[in-house]
Length: 306
Image 1 (cartoon, rainbow, N blue to C red):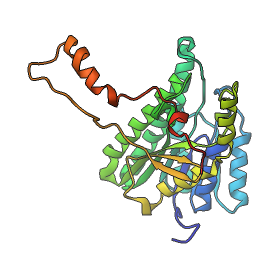
Image 2 (cartoon, rainbow, N blue to C red):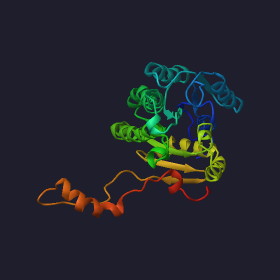
Image 3 (tube, rainbow, N blue to C red):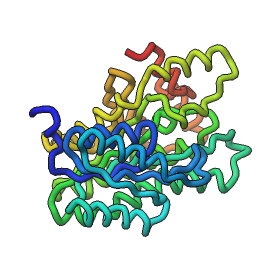
C-alpha cells in the first residue's frame, strides 16, 4: 500500500492531541489520509486549567501539511462531552472510524498520602474517559460494521511503579476495557488494542530525578520520541491490520513488544481440600519460585532503547 493511503477515507478522534504522543498520533493519522478531530482540554499535566492553543496548534500543523482537522476542547471525563466529540466527527466529516484514547493526567503521590481527589481525577480522565469516548463511538461502529479503538496503557499498570496507584489502576483497567471491547464487538468487525508507550512527554517529565540513576533513566527516555508511538497507532487502525485485536503492544523507540496477558503459571490440588494452614505450609512454598518480584518498569526493560 502506498504511503499516504493507508487511512484514506477514515475519520479519527484523537484525545489529548494537543501535545506529545497525542499530537504526533493525530498528525500521523492525517498524513496517512485520515480526517481528524483533535481533542484537547489544554489543561496542565495534573489536569488543572484549560487552554485552546495546544489543540489549535495540532490542527494548524495538520492543515499546513495538506490534511483535514478540526479542534475540540472538551473533557473526556464528561460523558455527554465525549458524545459531542463523536457527533462532531460525524457532522463534520461524515463518519467516525477510529478512536484513540490518549488523554491523560498525573497526580503522583505515595499511596498513604493519596487523596480521594487524586484518585478520582486520574480515574475519571484515563479510565472513565476511555469508556466515554468508546461508548459514544460504539453504536456507530456497530451500525457500519467496522471501527478501531486504540487505548494508551502503561507499564506502571502492566508491571508497576512507585507513587502511581491511581494511574496504574486506571491504566490496567484500560487493558480490561480494551479486551472487553474486542470480545464484545468482534462480531461487528470492530477491533480494540492497547499501546504502552515509552516516550518523552510533559507527563513523563514528572518522574523524580533526585538520584544519578533516576537522572540517567530520564535521559534515556528523552531519546524516545512520540512519533515512534504514532506509527504503531496508525498501523493498528489500518484495514490491512483487520486480524489484530485484543492485544497489548509496548513501543520503545524502534522496538515493538507484544506484551503477555494474564494466564495461569502453575496450579496445585489437594484431594482432601485445602485448609488455611496447608496452603501456608505447602501451596505457597511450592508456588514461590514462580512469584513475581516487586518489579518496576526499569527492572524489566533493563537495556538501552534501540
